[in-house]
Image 1 (cartoon, rainbow, N blue to C red):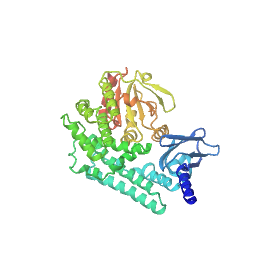
Image 2: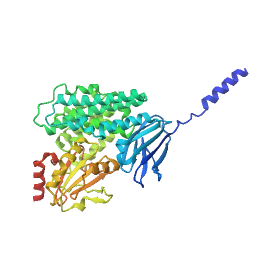
Image 3: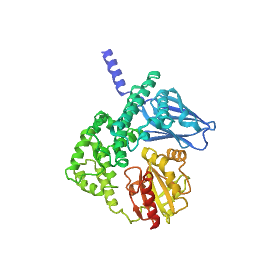
Image 4: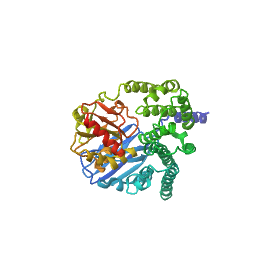
Length: 474
């Protein structure tokens, strides 16, 4: 009897014993030759951790509350890198700050995944070899669908091989490796989807896409999309880019079908390929937002079916509000007012630029076509109008301040006729201007009235020059 009581008591104690919280993750480091005066910031999920950088360039952060391993973002003095942190990690970051991307490295428990991220980022995104590898940098108007598939497949295979080679030399947690393979697959699919829009814009007379072009959708890990959507900012960005590119799958010709049965067919297609009602609704919402700029009649024709089939009330409310505003925007109407900070931290209002013709460029550092226009064509366009009443206003959307500052400096984008502005995360300038695809260009006259909400790109050459000349002559 006594034994039974003791066993019962032990079981009761075990049942009521509180579960200990997971161990904290510690991130410390040394930033050699780093500028003083800024704050080390690490974003994990929806929480931000920050600390001052010590006089010798050292810092230490204790990150509590991590239940599982998760992506994180590190920022200091306009430099940024992606991390991967797990409960119990004790990771030390070291870097020679002037050569940040090339020299960032890690030691300690949890260093393996972070060193992989640093080395893969240098090889495939930031280093001197990256442009020769990435499909976006190798596209040309004559690139065929078959050639694009070869470029995308080759880039994906090189990334997977790099991951496999690294994992053989330095064992990686299975969950981390799976996350990387998932991200590589999403990037592959996004590149193939974005190519459709690139080809439509740069090779308008090209033959139609071959019938099996979109077969790659069957090879995307779409069943896992709901698990990653909303998990972290990095995951949100990857899923968001895929869904934005998916608009080219839904309307490869670029125009919505006015047939009342067309929108239900798009819902059926997106539901079958994405395998998730929330993602289906998000994809159709993004499609209609995207087409507001150049196909408002098509959006209005699709709107009744959207209201009937969409199951997300927030999308319904947002699209209704956008449409109400959009029908008030038009040529000759006042451009929506805004006030944003420029690259020096000074507030600049649209009204401050009155008296000049404005060429607005809505862009983001995450947008390869935007960077191609900025690096390859914007300098020549600005030089052509040097000394005249034209101001080139660049509005960065979706960029952290550090990344924005870094890209503007690296690309030498500043100048006497350039105004560089950034919309903060809680801003709504892009919403007010109904910007749903990037890059997008507007022309505004000297009095602040809209001339063109879909102005030619810098790469359109003579067409763009002629549009600005007409605006100057008015």
